Length: 244
Image (tube, rainbow, N blue to C red; front, side, top):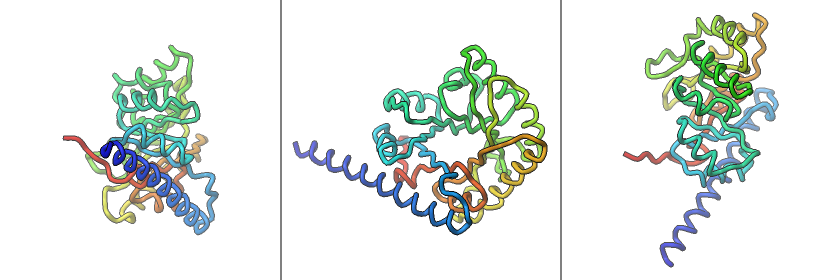
């Protein structure tokens, strides 16, 4: 009985934590948007559920975060089944291998991490079989860090031109991960570069709606630089717990 009571108290505390964190994040976004004269409604929060439970993800949904993101295919499919809420929009934000495309294409609202024509074609081929169109973003490696995936910014325009010719996919924007640093300002040049690449592509006649950039430590800088999608994990759910 004592253990059950402690578990219940912990569960309630975590739920309140998620709710309070979301409220705080929305307040920070409102303040930034007022300062840089942007419309707060143009900023979409994706709650990144990597390593967090479906219960915590559901708490985010109850706090009106209806966009959930996952880095791993199997984790996304598991949580999608457990949460089973038609209001939720699922985002795949991790590196997508071509042999996993059939598990994810057509099942998520947006794939953030398309970094090659080969991957785009693989998504297209599968979606044509099931009669669906998949929204995608092209991922750029703006920091130049070898640990990150993404196409070279200098090749983004050509890749965009190729991708828009591929059927059953819809290119809606670009994505990047800022430089890993404790200082959010270290990410600014990466976000500026993504915005400038978007502008370059749009000058070529390709309309792009979204810039997916900014995470828990640097989302304010990302919004200043034009982010329309920010991907937040620890800012919403607290510190991640990794199993060995």
